[in-house]
Length: 344
Image 1: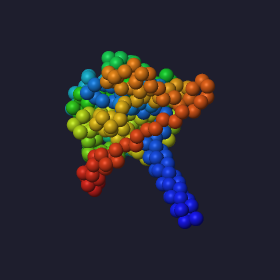
Image 2 (image 1 turned 30 degrees about the vertical axis):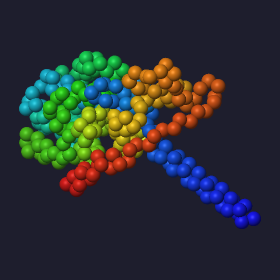
Image 3 (image 1 turned 120 degrees about the vertical axis):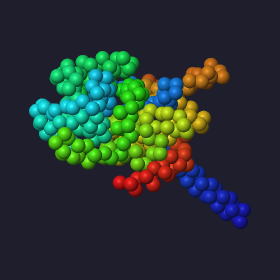
Image 4 (image 1 turned 180 degrees about the vertical axis):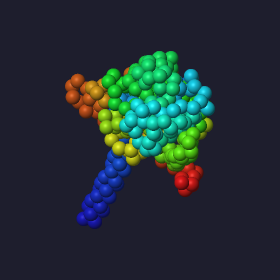
């Protein structure tokens, strides 16, 4: 009898351990989930996707558009050139600070307003300074993205406000960010946390960068946020991980807090993959597969054929085990940045 009781106790204890293990595994898998309809992490050194979820899905770009706007403006204008705000620019729907008709700013300051605070009026003013009209300027923007190789991107305006036939992909956004970093003024602006901008008549605007990860990620070089009711929350960024540059991009997130959370997940995934703890992969959700995206030569033909299916024709469900991000490395990246966050 005693042996039976001990046996039952052991079985019960084992069951508890099994339940606990399953709970821990499921919790980790949930924590590792990217809910955004489209997201990507790209190794800047190779240009290869480390992690992708629908990386070529065309979605509205929102204010990530302004990276292209400022590049085209700097291709043709001096940073110290003065620009007067037109009636149309002043009336463009925008966040604070509001730019008034007749006010004059340098191209330098308009770029800071457009990239740090995402002021739509500043983007329109830059467009008009280059081409006389926003419509003509948009043609230059679309030529620019073709030169960059962002073949799945098209713009309808300079600000990223909703427009007909306006779209991009997260993979294209990483190409756009890569090119944007070659402009010193853009790189400087997206890395700046706070700035004081002054009009020619002395009107001052204290602006803070919309990229909150500048305060919590040590390796964050910079990024560009975006939001419209249609595009939802968007973000493209550049971050160094162990001296390796990584681009991330997310489109269509439901809220701003989730935008930061999922960008951190992307960075943790990238770190694990670059360190060899996990293999790259691309996830397609619409009747497609999760496909291994390793760029190493496989040891056998069989390893190349491995496909993790989320939904196949026979409606059989297969569940893929994913490794959760390296929590230790994520905490290390943010330690110094958390101290820096006290500066504001």
